[in-house]
Amino acid sequence: MKTDYPGHDRAYQRRQNNPEYAGWMKHEELEEDWQLSWQPLMQKPAFPKQGKLLELGCGAGNISIYFAQAGYDVTGVDIAPTAINWAIQNAAKANVNVNFIQGDVLKLTEIPDASFDLALDGRCLHCIIGAIAFYFSRQLIVF
Image 1 (spheres, one colour):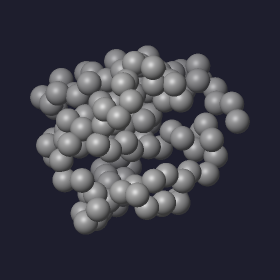
Image 2 (image 1 turned 180 degrees about the horizontal axis):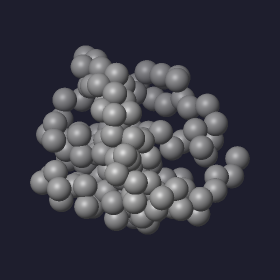
Image 3 (image 1 turned 90 degrees about the horizontal axis):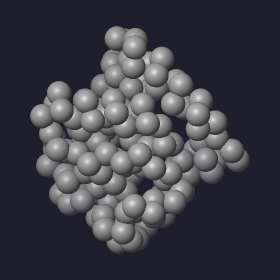
Image 4 (image 1 turned 60 degrees about the horizontal axis):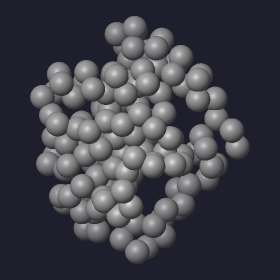
């Protein structure tokens, strides 16, 4: 499955110039996504309550920023240069420290192996590999 990577960057360029968008999603969609998806996940007993977190496909950095505000040491990776620039701006506005890297989530050559406690799919892997299955705390979780 091949993704249109240049198309992703063009989409971020359009969204960045539209005040309705916080990144890939509109502001209200992002808030709803955080409340309905990520916050409940954080409440699961097996979910680490702190540590080094890697967000794959971080886009404009919103989820990475929320996790940084919750106390995690966060790195976000995205292929789109516009998204990474937007993420850096968003982190500065939120006054949080997040390391954003422009890179291919399938290669991650700039990230040493075993350097994170937790890796999250920022909703990019389905664009690359189709259905998602991953291991979380030694248990397979399929979405």
